[in-house]
Image (tube, rainbow over all chains, first blue to last red; front, side, top):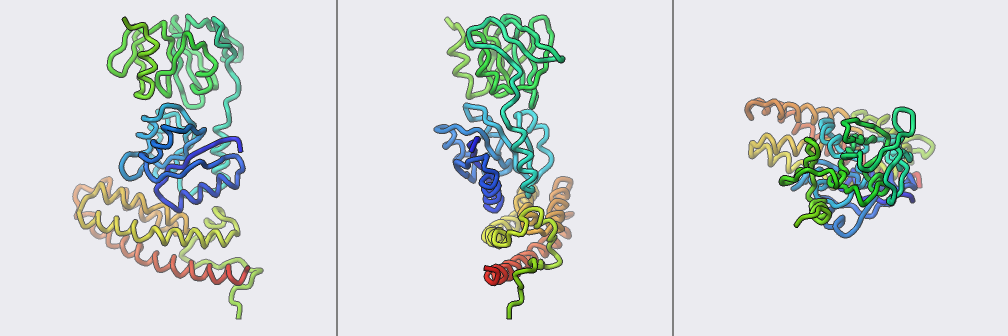
Length: 230
Length: 134
């Protein structure tokens, strides 16, 4: 087993089928099945998993509200019977979208999409720069030159202080481990910011050279800890 | 007399899309029986919710209730009923008043009732088939 997951799904037949697919794949260990967001959240407050299979429409809160409230960024595969969640799926960096009922082959295709990203960034936490693979070459970016990093599905965008944008195949989760922790902090599931570049903060938004960056509830306390507030 | 020779595949009712079920479950008829059993266990609660939402004339809740029951028809190969649910959801989305849903709901309700009987009959047949196959 290489991945741990939970299933958040209130339809029993769909949950059972997912469990069977996970077992058959030999790649995913199901740590729990929850029929509502509240129960899943209680579990995720105490545990982490690599992957969530998430239904959207459930009694009480919907699936996206779960993603708003958890303090880490697992991979997410939506399992739904509605086609019109594409915009939300993009916003929440969802890896794939399974329409119920799906075939085992389609399930495996979804799993393929969440394999760890190919290494596209080279750095260590003590370094003053990173290298990224973009535009067919290795490009050096000094930490001080990076304003923020934004998720774009399976890609990320580095925005620099000379207003250049570099897009490379990677994930925020992977980069969080690789970039300098002295300089950078994840403030939202889709954003890592350079702490030295923040101009101001209002409510749940950071402002960096005119760019508005959302701060999630889960990350807000970390942001306050890291800012030099006097 | 054994009506279900073990060498032969199970013959589903013609209302059920056997090809679709084969794509989902292969020839694992014991699991198919399990799926039909699970669906029947959930069926009453899901249909009661649909009826309750219709009775209360709450279009948004009715749409949500039909959305929730919709995929179970896919799991048992009743693709046409699944599509009928989708069409009813669409009708709810565009309905200017509750009255325009009355005829479509009557048809949907009939499908829900008929489908339950069909799933029950098919589950019984699968049980016999699997017993003889064992």
